[in-house]
Length: 148
Image 1 (cartoon, rainbow, N blue to C red):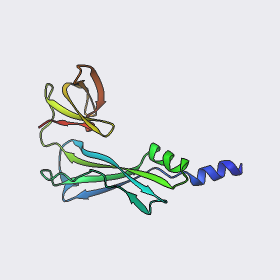
Image 2 (cartoon, rainbow, N blue to C red; image 1 turned 30 degrees about the horizontal axis):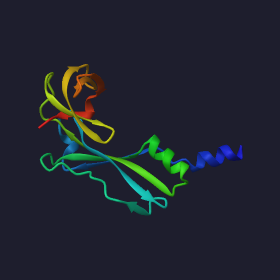
Image 3 (tube, rainbow, N blue to C red; image 1 turned 180 degrees about the vertical axis):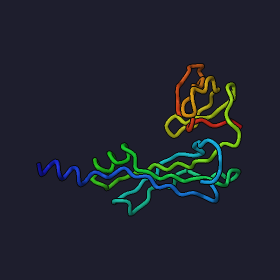
Image 4 (cartoon, one colour; image 1 turned 120 degrees about the vertical axis):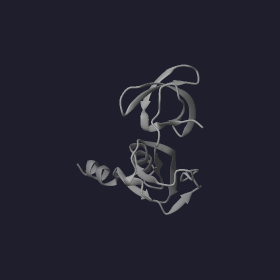
């Protein structure tokens, strides 16, 4: 019983912090991730490790920065006893034009940006993208944006 209580109290909780930049909350449109990455820390968050390549969109000034501790982040922190920890960070923007079938798009595979072609929009949340090797992949529409 003591072991179970110790583990429960040591596990970091899942949390999300949303910070709106300018009038992001007032804008109409569908959200998509402009940038994603992880902040890494040592010694219970006291010492940042490196600087992530996460930027605010210059051409899309209104945005929302979401910082969260996801399951993997919490698991790593728990396994290392907090000596090494991570937070997931995403910068969201809103589309001014909706995506259309046939559009060349970018999407995330982990933290890597990939290219593809929008094949089908299933609903307001899901779509199918043809990957670079012509394989259909079902994904969250929030993780897809028009290629430039």
